[in-house]
Length: 494
Image (cartoon, rainbow, N blue to C red; front, side):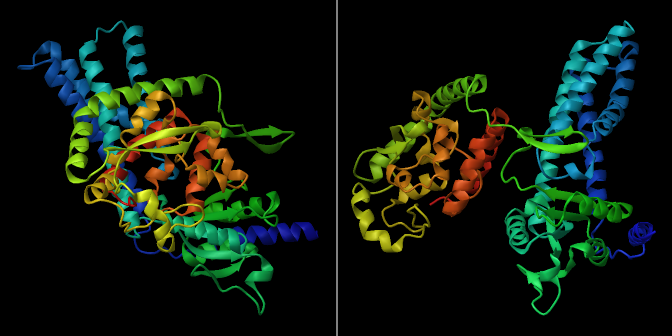
């Protein structure tokens, strides 16, 4: 009977007895999805109209009437395909590549569906119209979703369109999460309340706040705190107190208000493709695959690197020549700067860069040690007096690094990878940091698109190790895409 009474008590707590306080603007997710639907509709409608005009120029006639109807119905079929692919689910809004993946997959599905229906019904279809309308519509939709996401990210940097989160865990883990989400506001998660273990959340020595966020209860109060602050999500961090039973009870308590439950495992910086859940005797086990550092993917990456470097050198040759002339005309000394760096498996190589400093810069480095703003093993000065006027411009837009395409073509470097370190930096590496050297260093990388010289030593190492353990060709393409905007902004480069 005692067990039944406790169960009923928990069930009573799960009843919607706590009135959730919804702050102004809390329904932004629904509005965003409605805008996304409108954007999706207009993208495919535009593609259909363009394909019709190009394929059937002139005055409409009887043979083109079916395509007029198809152009009108195509956007509706597109919305249905996106909905079946779950492209409108709130968890995919604004974060991660999954949103784009589902749009792209919907394009393939719709093209295949049209082809199968036409073949099964023996319907004659103007292939030119289909080939133009569906792929072009998918491309337009991807571009429109990208711009919509950038608009959302801009709003989030201003503190708008955020999901209100209650964090449950130990103080140190919660503090790390709060700092991370503040640095990456585009994720759209704002921690508004914290629940700590009982000994820290109650009593005379209770912790009243964590990183400025109030502590409103202990682990068992999480559901009530959600109602109190009008939260959208509960983030449970890895801790022994929140075991499977406790998590299940918390999920029961918050499911009535459609509050999202996210659980952060003890695994840090491990990407989704390496993680899978495999049930064993009813127990879900989280399996972590080893990173693929050898094999066919490595060979393909090498081919992409060399072909991309060759294409880049040919396409950028006029710009490279212009930069070389400007350096030669404005500063005495050689145009190119050569320096020894450490590559894959500790092998040293000579890196090529456009010279951005005075000729005796290395000799003057010892005079500037007191002005070093770097931490750990890095040496960096924001207003380095050794940099020339032209050099500052080259560094701001990373033009000085373009000659490293020669290193990529020679096989010393990759287009994407960890930052190429100096030998004296490697000499001071800890055991874990040596893992950066199991892959080739890169012309760009996560460090380039995440802050560049503004990063601390710890952040730089963490990003490089994340890349090493999770690299893929898709990830490389994503980094190269983001590198363009990072270079145009010029932030963090000095």
